[in-house]
Amino acid sequence: MKISMAPRPTEEQIQEVRRKLLSAGYSVHRMDREGETLLCALGPADFPEEAIRRLPGVTEITKITKSFKLASRQFCASDTHVAVGDVVVGGREVILMAGPCAVEGEDQVNRIAEGVAQAGAKVMRGGAFKPRSSPYSFQGLGVEGLKILRKAADTFGLKVVSEVMDISHLEPACRYVDILQVGARNVQNFTLLNALSLLDKPVLLKRGPATTIEELLNSAEYIMAGGNYKVILCERGIRTFNTYTRNTLDLSAVPVLKELTHLPVIIDPSHAVGIRKMVAPMARASIAAGADGLILEVHHDPDSALCDGQQSLTLDQFRVLTVECARIALVLGRTLGPEGGLDTKKAGP
Ligand code: PEP
Ligand code: MN
Image (cartoon, rainbow, N blue to C red):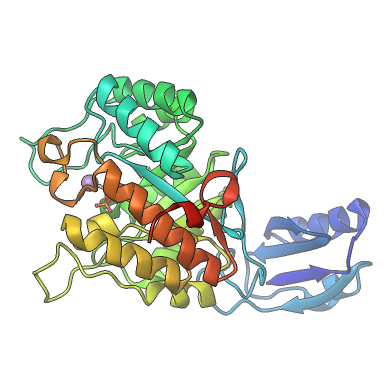
């Protein structure tokens, strides 16, 4: 149930509603939005509607019909802004996250961090714990990789996003990472999602190759149900009968998710298509479709990358792409790039 309060309710009014709901056996979630307080009560079916409606400050009680309650637009009509320090995902600015598939070493990460930061990325990506299809492939540098990422990101003024595959990764990742990434393979690892729900860290939740939109939103709900509302959704391609590209980018996931949820939505065109020259067109299309950001694989020397070099952009390609994306963002009344706005006039034809 959604309990709407009058504009700027007193703390006492909110606490009274909360107490009543808790004593009736409900768990209570609270979101504060620009002068608006939303309460969501989750629990038994026989909701004491009349008793709650009579409480001071309560204006409306609405049933949330979706299975994902806290993640739904029914609960919260306005967009969620996930703040990562001074970087905000889900606001007017389109956020670029870029970096190698895997952290390979200090020199590699530094070169890429410098390049993507100059081009306008706000967040550095890089896998330290790598979910590889083959156990014989490079599995990542682990905690050492996280340290390398943190140092490079701090040097070039970037935030860090990196994948956690297991609960045991959370402790070191919380020390070195700003956004914890849940990979496509773990989108329904409910034990991991429950553990993430107890943290005060933004989570980048990737859709799996065979995950429906509803399943993705229910996975987001797992994280939110424990009290962590900082969830960023990511479409990264789904498996279809088409085998030409690595996956099929479900671009319609952007408007669909925007209708169903208030959470930010970003796109990973790199894993979606898996072919370097096709990444930029899908990246541009993603911005045009209304994505709040992109996460892209970029490497200073993709042909010698230890992982996913075939889909990694060069630094030059990334620079060109950021300018193109900034232009598209502008058309949509959004900004992108350093200080929130690339100077697109300087960027050639
Ligand atoms: C990644 O982003 O490093 C990754 C492994 O992607 P996905 O989980 O989408 O396959
Ligand atoms: Mn990859």
